[in-house]
Length: 385
Image (tube, rainbow, N blue to C red; front, top):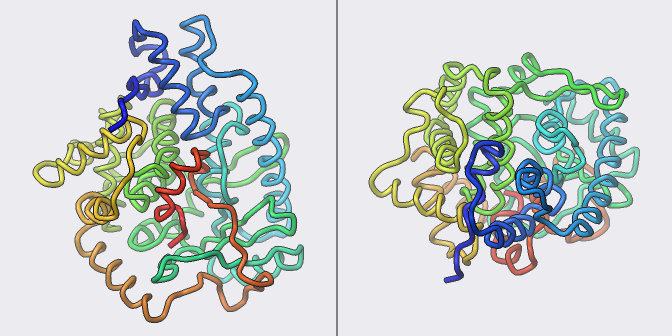
């Protein structure tokens, strides 16, 4: 097993208050590994207060500059198509990376983004698909799990003609069971208006943004691809905790059958140093017994920055013990079993398909930029279900 690096998470959660290590070389090594997981520009942004305390840079400035340039291009592409979608008059709320980049980060360019995630009413799905297809977007089928795509909330991405902007269309904020309580109508009703360089769009309120961080991290089984969801949530709790209605959030988790993954996520954030004291006790108490053993493995992976390969059995155990209520895990198993015989492509009937089966670049909703060896071992968590 590889030697574990310095635990960098308290410095992210409390950049001005967590003690600095005596061994600055260990901190620099951890910062470099962290940048390899999430991207140099994002790591530099998150660790900027720590660098200021040290009076020295923690990361290679050239690598940060190159990465920032790439992210500037990506954000420009996403904003351009986001404007076009808003201008159509289609009722749309932007989710996940694009929304969080503008609401949680002082510089939205640094937040790595994969797809441009949009939420539309089911009645507007065909209209959104028609608009994007008229601009050259196509659904491109990428290799799926053997059981196909099991999400009932979104589809395979529609990709722009130049490949620079994949758009992920959601008709629910997240897949079953989250949309039992966190409905599309509720997200629209409480959405906040965000203004960015003269462009106005809607994004989920703080409560709903935190829920989506948790439910998406749970779908990732709290492995590598969940890292930026945890980072988003840490920043949200650090800077917008007063906006959270904890009683309402707990009710959403109970009614939507995702109380267990929500509690696991908040306990993880607390273990990493985030401020969760205002959350109800039941929502931030670490799991015990067999579930506690699996949870400690999650915390260890985060603190060690995911150094080891993960067997498939560990993924399955974490889904059953931490990532879903038992009845939800059973339902997912049954849906996957059914999909072995009739796999879903994830492309709606109204959607135009690109020529042939095109393997898109390995994608992650977290937008993680990891070393090739790391990405290969986590492929099963990154291919969209």
